[in-house]
Image 1 (spheres, each protein chain N blue to C red):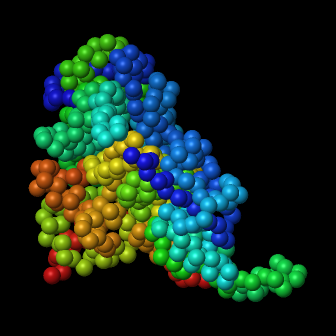
Image 2: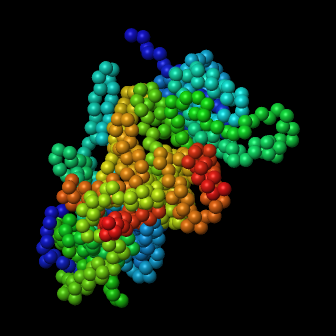
Image 3: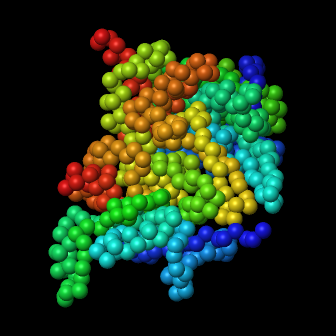
Length: 258
Length: 378
């Protein structure tokens, strides 16, 4: 029997910092196994050598911020059997979506002395605003164990175990003491999707919301808590306005405090 | 695990050195001694090697969504109430692999993980948590749907209870008839007695294992004064409960499933799941099957889940409890009402953890009372 054809994997970059792609290279122990399981056909951060499409799986990092990329993502979608977005930029617009709350021309005028060649859309938008997405992997950056889980699920034809409940689950399973209750520290954990591996609260820091809104976020109730803990309107707004500022539940909540 | 042994003739008195040897003897017997330790701003369960690892003169301040450790000013070792974690994290760990399978060409073999040989001695278990173990025994120690891993750990465990000398701000064990006195379910119980010139513990054996342990450490018979002193301490704790559960919560909840009040709670409820994860009796888990990249190895993991997650009620077509109101109702109604039908006991032990560790301080006693008072208005 001939060897079954290996799945062709492509990794694409849009407006982003490359940190999520780097998570793939960070899979040091599993990298050889991954290279054995798939044909890495297009991954410019790892190799200049590329193989033409179509691709079985495309991992897409970054948000859409200019008209060129808005066209490019359509081509990638057409060449991809499955398309998985990775990271807060691709799934929610990223930190660069802060511009969605202001005028992009003002930023351009501030940053560039000669903005002649700068072409930017008014908003930074997630990939699912442009094309059909088969799965969204959250995080800023993504968690490499979750990435391996998604890849393993894809290769074995099963549903990935990527829960959408709150980060509080990770704190409680790990035995991390709640920073809100025991310290009065503002924390986005109750409205944020689990998955980071419980990075901040074990170090007595509130959750920054890197993994975006959990499945049923009650941001209004949490903001009430922030207020009673002494946060003013601007502080409450800014808590929601970071890596996932444009994710709808966080965007709406921050706008309530504008 | 401990059989009922109401014999009180084994009451004796040990001092701090006696407690030190008690820990030492347990360790010599191969137990991992687990006790609350002051760490990360709370009383967190962890391994102790001797009394030097126990918190000295530390109290807790507990209220809805509020927990602080504060100096108690004295020498007491057990002056605080229930901490953020129940003992279930040792008897029924948050994440546990059930088995792994290995592919060999066209066939596969299953490697079941061996039964637990963990041998824990729990030091400082309060009456509410003894009740919680009893409640979880009813869930896990039965055929055919019991859990052999839980049962093995529970049978291997040695329980040193402590009678509470202070009621926490969110405690309501009196109204759940579960405390503050440790009545049974322990191997040894301790009541801390502190005077100007002495610091001792009234020790009582609650099982054969407990008798044998106490025989191995320095002690003297308790005097009548010491025994009545210990009784007075526990009575004083009972009189200063922070909270109270309404009478007949079982039927109040059952009558109010269509109350408008659920929406009011849902406005505050974060559906974060914290109440279920800190509850010492909540036992729900999810099972995840994972594979490696090559598909050569598959594993089945069991993890703590919660009725607050959408996946928990996911059946064909979607989740059946989509609204926060439905999920809060499910939790409190199961805990206080349906649990009776299912296991012949309340699922609530009055420890107050769900009140303290709810970030927005939703209070199970208050919600039950509001539902009952709403009936009066009809």
